[in-house]
Amino acid sequence: MTTSALRNANPAKTKADAVVVGLQQRRGQAEVAPGGEEVAQAYGRSWRPLLATLAATGKAGEVLKVPTSRTIGSPVLVLVGLGEVAEGQAQVDAVRRAAGVAARAVPNAASVALALPAGSAELVAAATEGFLLGAYRFTTYQSKPDTTGIAELVVCSTLARRKEVVTAFEEAQVLTAAVATTRDWVNTPPGDLTPPAFADAVVEAAKAHRKEHSRRGQRVEVTVLDDAQLAELGCGGLLGVGAGSSAPPRLVELRYTSKDARTHLALVGKGITFDSGGLTIKPAASMGEMKSDMAGAAAVVQAVLAIAALELPITVTAYAAMAENMLSGDALRPGDVLTIYGGTTVEVQNTDAEGRLVLADALVRATEQEPDVIVDVATLTGAMVVALGDQVAGVMGTDEVVGHVLDAARDAGEQAWPMPIPEQMSERIHSSKVADLAQHDWVRWGGGLFAAAFLREFTAGRPWAHVDIAGPSFNSGGPRGHVTSGGTGYGVTTLVELARRLSA
Image (cartoon, rainbow, N blue to C red; front, side):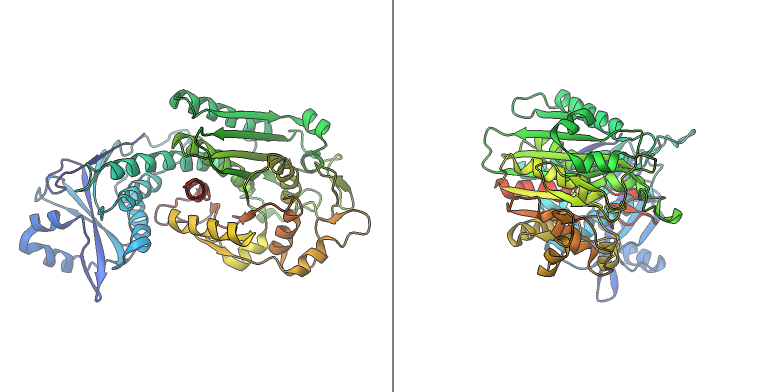
């Protein structure tokens, strides 16, 4: 556990195992970024020769470690590249990424001082988020985990005594804790995070939240609907998808209400704890990361808890639809017809397109509360990864809500891109000859857009956006910036920022 402090301190004199200074590119050369001037001054005339000797470029992602011989208070100087000189949101994003790189550069340092650009509340928050998330490690299943780690983080800023900066610093720690828990859940092996176990984990997280944030108005109410209750309600999507597994489905519903709430936001998350594809089985190589198919549900749950911890003046309800898509004699078959909660019938053609079925039940449940805005988050389609790559989410739905989500994602430092729902998709989802809707039609093109059109049928015409995070929810490669390997926690910060905007 890393403790964090915000100080108006000279980083050159701060006692820490390592001090981090940013380098930025200007006219092809590296120069010290704002926040590191006092460290550069401590080196005096040797500063520029030092950069030249190290062949420093200031390019984003660059990291250089230098023994200081006690030229400054720290024995190690860490130089991290920020890239081209930028301002506004670009600078905030660069600082967040650079802080993440720095965290992994000194894994054995007990204490680290950050002398990165910190001339605004947003920059202080970005440095804090980036470092704490870049230092994230998942060691639960290691028999001999590396117990070393950064015990203390000091963020240096001349604005450290300003109220808005202190607030941003504290809120950044709330957000990073929520993202880290989301990553933990996504990284947990699917045999240990079945739908019932996932539901129990949400209940425990809400209890811990209640204990930590006991002030009035911060309570998050949690309701868990088991398979018997789902059957009584007629949630055919969840029951159909979960029929092939020995671990029955769950629908977890959360609610947070501020006494000052002016807006009601509903969040819906896909929680497929493992996706074999069902009878439309996936190729073996495609199953290795399918423990991450519950990343949307994890994100909406943690977003609600973070929103409550931040006491945002808003009402938020969340619906985490949890099921395991497995094979057995009871498994859902292509050609089956399911009755979704509320009565709409759906013909199933592809059991590997199961996410939209569990989301349908949850979306109808969400509409019953008559929220002002609905946003669903799901690792829904490989087609979206083909279209946008593995680091960008696709956003579809009502134009105004899509715009809000894109703006929130930009400020949260998460990449998202708008996608259309063409009118012909409506024709395709109404192509079933035996049911109200077709769940899938095997047309190769536009699979992600088809899925969004299908989900729209269950939103009761309310303002809504669908966020397909199939790409950015899991990083199968090496770490980049503040994003570590494995579960990324994508969506948490965007949803919290969206709630902040809607409640303003």
